[in-house]
Image (cartoon, rainbow, N blue to C red; front, side, top):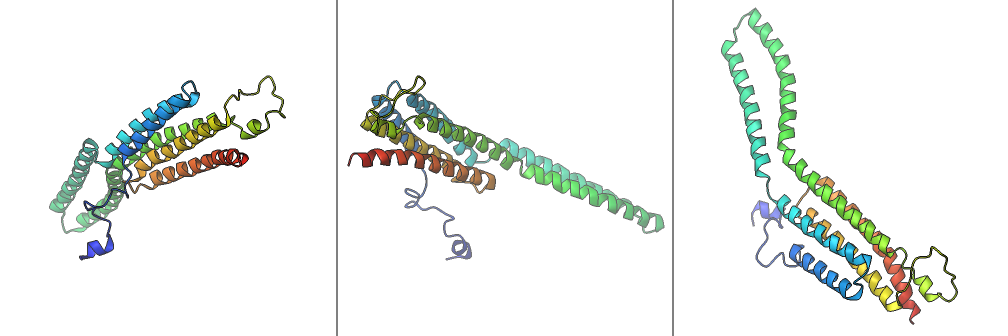
Length: 253
């Protein structure tokens, strides 16, 4: 065992590894498609079906984007390398001219001191420019990933909106509650309501899994934080749904 393997034992994935330790995008997509079919069969006229269909489109685009972000953006990388090489070459040429024209006398030393002060400022700006160019690809990837995660976050809130009016208390005490003119329509049976809430919970869980594709092969701090925030949001929304499911389940006993 060499030092690199000792320090980083997960650096290279073997043929036996990765089946149950890596999220497979194709498996997530198949699960989303099957969930769409299940919603279609049980609630063909519901708004939840439309949400699921749009979520599937967003999931496909997000998966494609996450796959593209794993590899390098060659035009940006080549442009950054070329620009950095030109900047370093320009500085090297300027230093060469300074050394070539330098004279060991009073005026030459004075000129060297003035040039050194100016060169320090130029080197600082050069370092900032190279830093900007080197990190340009990472910033572009981060911007694309955060935009996709924002879209997934919005869909999570839309899913939550579809379950807000699905109140199990009304179903269990429907003979004791007087509906008003603006009361939402509640025509689902107990079993249908449980399935509806369960589908909402599954959509939220799949939403988090699609978001996790962006964090699976990156160490970008902002992307990881955004994915973690989305997962916490989904967990909170799912907890509310499962409270309703538990109420319905306990009422049957």
